[in-house]
Length: 286
Image 1 (cartoon, rainbow, N blue to C red):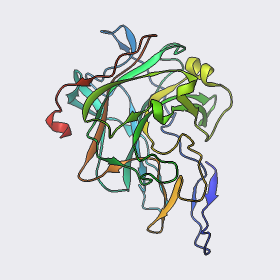
Image 2: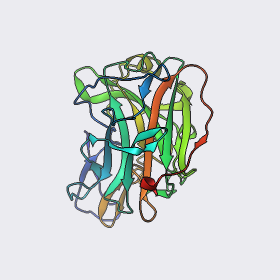
Image 3: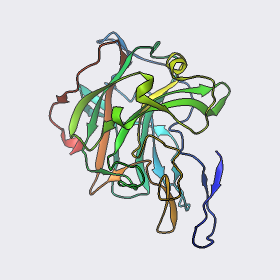
Image 4: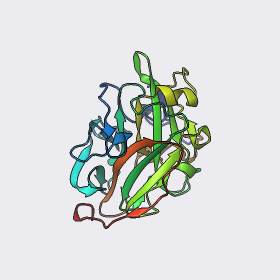
C-alpha cells in the first residue's frame, strides 16, 4: 500500500503512516472451490450447513496502533438457526470504534459463478438497523450506512492489485432502512458501479471483469460514490481523539450491538427478483 503522512494544517503534529487510499476488502491468499445451488439451478451460496468458505474482516485498531487498518481475514461467522432456510453468515459489532463491521465475501477460481454479462446478483440480507459510521453525514456522506456489492478481478501474480468495482450508493443496501431479512437484487450494469481507486491493475474494464472476476461479496461503506475523497475537510480520513481513522469505512452499533447477515447469494438471469421482507427475526439476532 502507498503511504500518506498526515499533517495538521494548524500546527506540526507527529506524522502517522497510513494508507493513501481506502483498503481493499479481502485477500487472495487462497482460491476456493465454487458451489452450485441445486434447488435453484443457479451458481451461488446457500450457507445451509456451513459458511461455504466465505471470509470476513473488520476495520479498526486491531493491534493498538494510532491509525485504522483492516483486521486479518478470518472465516465468516456462521449460524444454523438464522436464514431462509436456516443457515447464514453474519457479523456482530458493538458501539466501539475499534472493531467495525466491514466485509463479507468469497474468493474463487476466475468466473466461478459463470459469465455475469447481463446478469443480476441477488441475496437475502439481515439487519438490525441502528448502524453508524464515524463520518455520520460529513463531507459527502448522506448519513446512511450501506452494504455495497463487490465484483473484482485480481491482477495475475499480484494479489495486492485488482480491477474492483463497487456499487454506487443508489444501487446498494441501506442497512438502516429495514430490520430482519429482506431480498435484494442488483443489475450488473456499469451504471450501477464505480471503479475502486486503490491498487488498480488497469487490465479489465467493468464488462471484462464480469467475465474474469475472482471475488464477489458485500462490504460496509457509507459516504459519497468517490471513495478517493481526500479533501482535507473530514472526508475519508479524520483525526478523532488524536487517532487517525477511516471515517466512511466500517460501521458500528449506535447502542448495544448491531448485526448484519447474508444468505442465498447467487447469480441469476435477466429478470430480477422483487425485494421482499421475509419472516420473523429469531432469537440469535435480537
